[in-house]
Image (cartoon, rainbow, N blue to C red; front, top):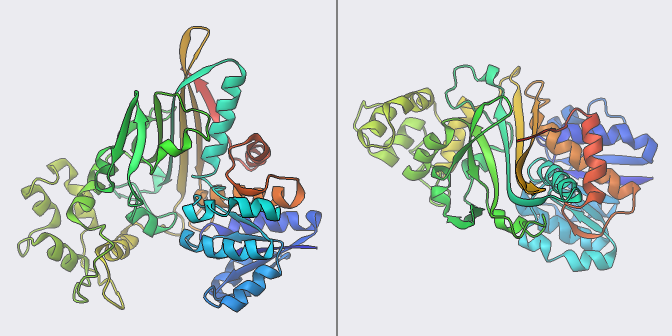
Length: 439
């Protein structure tokens, strides 16, 4: 019997655990769900007969190594910064590893050693990155197989709130995944992409003003801001010669211009700890803006030229003076996260929504075309979210492939057919599929 250890039982774990549980008897494996939160473990593993909850403090190195030693494969749902530590243990003990996170520089350096040990370190097997890679590569390979020359590539993904559940929220956004990642979006370095033959290098504080708009098949318009280093994917995608290559994130129309205000004013700064007296949204606003007593946040923004009157309701919606309840002094970004977590919290019956759009320009038989590939999925409630489903299921399916098939070893990203073909087929059976149309 083979064992799978899942480290970290957070937002994306339920669908992953449920899938592994359903496949456990047939594949003769057991699953250990590991987390420090006993209450969360009980909730996430209830009714999963092949999943055993295990309280684990990741900081306890001896206990952690014991769990990894007892497993054949480790799934890390821990923060990305912890993956290299887990990978080092897996490498030392000869265990497979699977994550939904981007391949870091530290992870990439383990490729040759993992190959030598004959183990697979599968990364970027979630939604974005993950389903975006697999669906894009399938479309690219299919077009090339028919003789098409690809000249442009754009790929966009967004984790949003269902329009019917915005509840008067002008941002049309709520947290369906790690709030910290939303607050600190674009701060991982220079954002780079290619458009119409020109290279663009955008510093983190200008990313949200560099948005464009894109439309889905129903002509719904989204803001789209560029993601990280798109250029690094041109070679893995086999698209080194295209004139446009952009990977981006989707938000509802109007979001990016409003969010850029927070960036410009320093609300997303995560470096400087502010005095502990700054413990309410109002005091945070006062500290950063120096506004006059009694002036609304939106009015101060209008007076100082940061927004126009049409954007006023974005900031009126957020202003209130609830204590932030920080036990210690925090950064502006940490305070903003707590502030928005009150206003952008998914309520019990709220449905989130995941949307993904690929726009692939190509030439065939002397004519220009554009293939649009679109996926849209809505969650059921705050527990069974579309985000959790689209992150957890492909990761679980990748685990199944590693343990049941002969898969490539070393540090892997699912851009080759051996990964994407079976996983996309399995996802379609779970209601996650793409609709394609050509312009």
